[in-house]
Length: 394
Length: 84
Image (tube, rainbow over all chains, first blue to last red; front, side, top):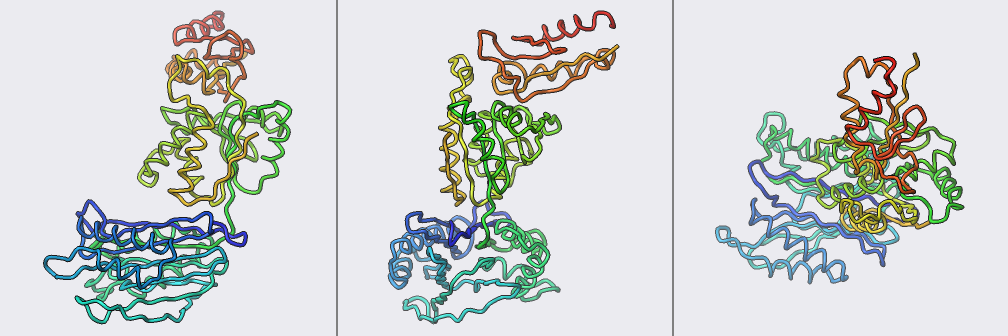
């Protein structure tokens, strides 16, 4: 989501308690395009396993929808508490939540209930925002409070929030008998000092992995971390397909040449046109191999050149499956996906000339129509990965 | 003698129509043949608009259409008949 020309990157990472197949924490993030808002919710259900997963998913979903409808936090929290099923043993219905609502002007409202406090990292320091304390009236538990903080997000700010799996990791070990606690701050400060522009995705991964390390590589609780980072957008241009009219080849080339950011070309014909128009030589690189796909090429001034429709089809499949972090392969499609996910603002420049050679009904079904694949990729990137995507047809 | 320039197209059409296998063929050729070949690949040779069917290759600048595993070996042998 953009904000005064800046981009708000939201990403999160979680790992399950050792031996569990589901996570008892639930994270949701939604971008309301019309209003320019980004809402992110993290909830930690009581206990772990399926029960915790159900509790936290219900909490997160309700918190997300109530917030999106601008419902007051009292109604939201009361509804959540009344809806959650009671735990048979502990006789309470319980799950924590942290709601972060950022509007189109960068005004942030964070509502926390029983979670470890969020961190705001600005210019090398952690900023303490005064919080409003609001008691929650409930029958089964006393002395619980909602903490509300409001502030305006500035460029290069990072908001970090996590479940107690992070702060309590390493508890009982000689090095950190009370858990990681404020050690998280030092860890984050050290990382950001070292890698100034560390992305939200990477930071979230690093924090969770460090928590796992604290626990001796066997997590004692579900561990999740969400990072929100307001930054200058990282631009990416994906250019695929030759222009409908050959006269526009020059226009295509100038768009590619003048683009500020990373560039990917998908398509043999497209690459040949650009190689001719930009006067850049092209060479096929046989070192990166994927049995399903034709190889990539190298061209000066372009970050990645791949084959077109087969590669895009596989990109779409990987984005749908959402398993890029677990994939070991490093073929052309994986390279494209990684570049897509490491960008904020993505422009898809789609040529609309129909490749007559692809219209033979005897060909494999994978040879889909380019425009349909591109539309699917745009939809996935926007909804699932919260990217800013724009399609231009030429 | 000069090496024989062999260029294999790995564009979408050529690749799905059998170009993928041509690479395996070339890589499994015996050493005495490979040493006379200069193998390269192209993202698209820009053919396939006419009647000819993919996959395409270029051997010493000559374009050949509809190349199969067997015909590729035959074509290479033909070019190298004086040497091997």
